[in-house]
Image (tube, rainbow, N blue to C red; front, side):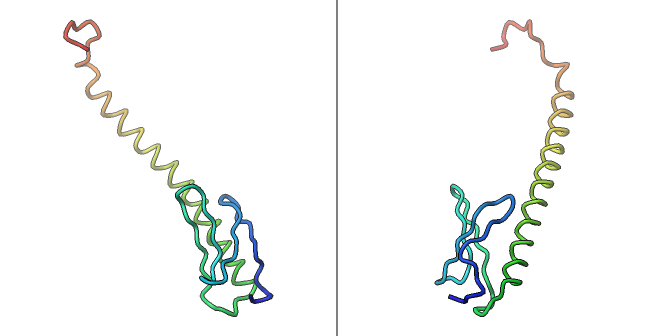
Length: 97
């Protein structure tokens, strides 16, 4: 293994990655999600690994923001949908199950 490569790295928001010499990448598994940070250069340096970690942390951060924005957008659509049909709903309707 390249001595500049750390066998274990930690990525904020994801977890701990372990270096896999065969695939020349860092891997992390969380349930059914498999993360892989692939080093393009077999003579990679710590700076290359730091750049991968930075990109992974940025991705997680942006995903969190995207998830929140998507949740708000869906909620707004569902509220509009519910409000459009609310007057048609009658709790005292005997045919209501």
